[in-house]
Structures are given as structure tokens and as C-alpha cells.
Image (cartoon, rainbow, N blue to C red; front, top):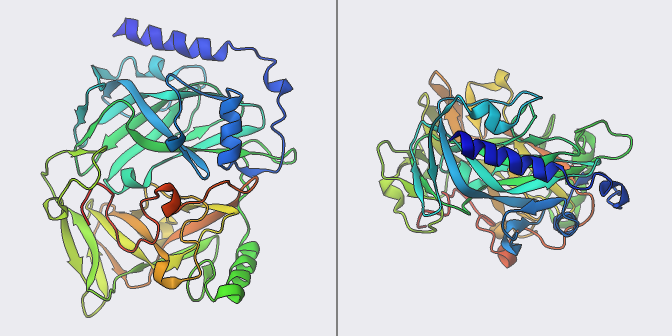
Amino acid sequence: MYNKIKKMNLLSENIQQTNPDENKNLNLTGASGVLPDGLIRKLLARKKIQSLDEITDHQIQPASLDLRLGKRAYRIRASFIPSDNKKVLECARDLIDHEFSIEDGAVLERNCVYLVELKEFLELPESIWAIANPKSSTGRLDVFTRVIADHTQSFDKVPIGYAGALYAEISPHKYSIIIRENSRLSQLRFIRKSSTQSEQQRSVISDRELKRLHTKLSKISGFGLVNGKARIADGLQLGVSLSSHNGLIGFKAKHYTAPIDVDKIGQYKANEYWDTIHETDKKRLVLDPNEFYILASSEFIRIPPEYAAEMVPIDPTMGELRVHYAGFFDPGFGNTDDLSKASKGVLEVRSLDVPFYIEDKQIIARLKYEKLAEPPTKLYGVDIGSTYQSQGLKLSKHFRD
């Protein structure tokens, strides 16, 4: 095992020993904001993003890059964050219980923690940093996954100018899962800061700008950032839908199920993994402690082409629950003037420690909108095979409709 760790550390060192003057000769300046697909391709062409294998076109989303699992995985005793003078595998050395190959597939057991090397690695210029999120399908399986970078004391954050390897920490909660080399559980967004922004400062738009944008879109089509009145306070507030035309309002994860292969689409029967939740006369729901629910927002959501959005954790003062483990919305999500084709936000909900009571349309999450550095060349939707466009209440793509 020590030889394997030493080999991976040497790989990381080689990544960082590329020409240090190369970044100075690159013209990657421009407007601040999230980089769309065109600029991600530019980073690829200039080898600011690299990979052990060729990066495929399917990995490049309108404003993010899907990350692929490598060949090796480690079962570890506990989660950790590397110190600022250590690499990930150096910190993991005393925590590794088992090292194994995932080339031909492997089961990750629920309630265990794993560390998996990623195929992509970075050599970012001094104006760009990155944020990782689980992909939507990952979050809807209750798989908690975070990206870790060497010498970085936070999860899912890759600092400005970072040069080195990336790793995924994976902890399945309700379901054991099957993964393999090239499985995609996480996505990476790249953010360019302006000369006036401090390191890792975001281009999140203000509440005043959000109200202006909602009003502008509403006047054009009658459908703004949401249908009806927008509740805006520290972002766009979203309620939970506990009513439905067909009576179905949510799903609750079952216990003791068979593993789910993350690469198999439409292969599983929902009733073998989920209990259905139906509307009651009082339109309310009591969340059981430490159970996992799939619910939907009461609003239809729109992400205009010039923006991306992130669903952020609920304010702890608003309740003892966690909402949305994934939380990134690409430009173009729900972007339609036709409400019959509009998209709701699917909420991944877990009550913490105590039972928690929620009511129909109760505020349960917030969306933060962020400007793109320039318009994307493609938008989220049917044309690029996006799974969750025009969604209502919807399980992950692994289950049959």
C-alpha cells in the first residue's frame, strides 16, 4: 500500500512541475463569473485541465465539467481534510483499511467512507478557482460525495492557481452502490475572479438584481424566475410542495435494499427502493429523524441562459433539516415561457436528530444565482440529453418512470 501511495504522490509532483511560466503567457482574462462550456474547452486546449485519459465531449456541461473515477479506491476509517502542508494520500495513509481496484466494478457499502482517485487533474491560472458539487443523480441516491485537493483545508473548493491531483470522498448513506472506472459522481465549476475581487470571491447577484431580473422576465412572458410571486431574501427562496394533482408528493427511501449500479439507467423498479408519500387533507408531513426523502419545490424554477444557480443549505435557524446535497443548476434549466414544460426543483431532504414538521409551501431552500463570464454555447435541456429538464417530482435516472 505504501508503494501505491508513493506512486500517486510522485504523479501529483509531476503535475506540479510543468513550466511555471506558461500561465503568464495565457490570455485567460475577461469578465468574472462562472466559466461556460466554451471557456472550459479553452482551459482544456491550453492544458489547464488534464486527465489520465482523454476528456470526452459528454463530460462538458453548459457550465461545468463531469469528473470521472480512476482505477483505485481506498476504504478509510474516517473523513478528513488535508493540512496545508500535506497531500491527500499522505493524510489518508493511517486511515486506509483496504485498497482495491474498481476497473471492473466494486460495491461501496452504505455508511462507510471511501477515497477514490479521480482521472482529471488541474494546473489552474492565477485568476481561476473551482467548486465541486455532486451530480443531481448522485444526490438523489443519497450518496454523499465531496472533492478533495492537496494542501486544501476545505471540501469541494479548489484554490486559485491550484496544480495537482483531485480525489473524491464517497459515503453512500441509504443505499450501497456499485461504481467502476469512469463513473461520474461529481462535477466541477470554474470561476474567474476579476482584478477587484479577492481570492475565491463569487459573482453571486444581489437580491435587488434578482428582483429586477424576475420582474423583467415576468413582463415578457408572465413567468419570471419562478411562477407567480418570487420570495427573495438572501437569494430566491423556495417552498416545498405537499400537494399534487395526482396525490403523490414524495418518496421515502427504504432500508436493506440491493446495491444500485450508478451507471445503469432506467434499470431499477422504484417500489423496491422507495415508499411513496401521498397528500393529506392538512397538506403537511412529519419527517422522521435520519430518513431520506425526495420532495419537490412548490415553485417552477427558471435559470436564464446568462446565469447558473446553486441551491444552498437552509439557514439552521429555519429548521433541523438538510436540503439538497447536489444543488447546482446549469444555465437553461427550466428556461421556457410555457408552464406546461417548466421544471421544479427536486429536493433531497433529511431531518436531523429529531422529527420535523413541514407544511405545504413552507420555505425550505434558497437559490443563489451567479453570472456567467460569457454566454454558453449550449444550454441545459433535451438537445444535449439532459435528464431532468421539465421535471416535476422525479427520482434519479436509475429508476424506471
